[in-house]
Length: 241
Image (cartoon, rainbow, N blue to C red; front, side, top):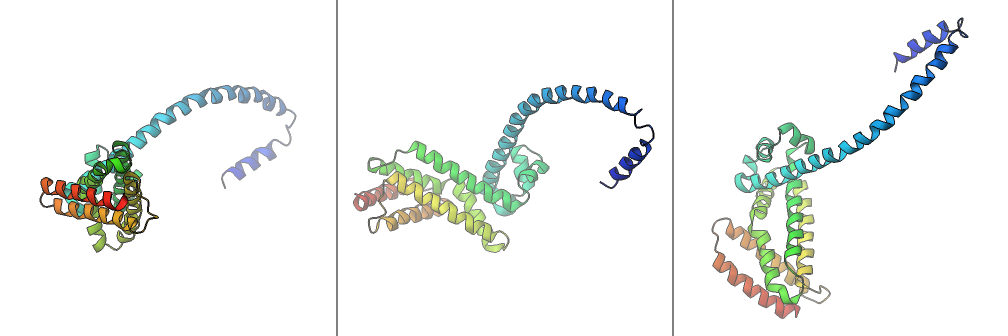
């Protein structure tokens, strides 16, 4: 800003004597200015056309990072899941990863929430809602808690219990994911929570699924899980009607 003022002042005072002589060049200069308008407008369309692919690439990069972060958490735990490790798995540079997620905490909390939302959406698409499909709904809900997403989330939860800067982020995330899981369960089960005891029964189902998820971390007892799922489907039929 300071450099512009002196330069403009000099030209104005120097132009005082030959003011009339300078008029022609000034008007002559008008034509190029207007001529330059056409290329500017012509160039607008290509710039707009290039924006969409760039945004698509950015979204694709972000999605790869989020999915890679959950996979790394599930496999390596919090200590082994650095930004560099996630970036390598996603096939992007560390700089690109930090462009999307400035901190490690940003990356992993966003990743768990993103994948949780994706899985809930997929579950709604796969399992029809209503009393006739309660067994399938229970199986789908249990699957959410016995796969890589739950394992990744568990590592994040444990890390948050030890790290002050991570704890508030994960506490807030847990509340959001918990509410979404509850809404999904209510919708799929066709549950009416205005009836006394129904809300607690739905929450009991989610707690049971979380417990099965913890048990699966050490041993995958699919046969036992089947029996538990079948029993809970019967319990829900009795409570929900």
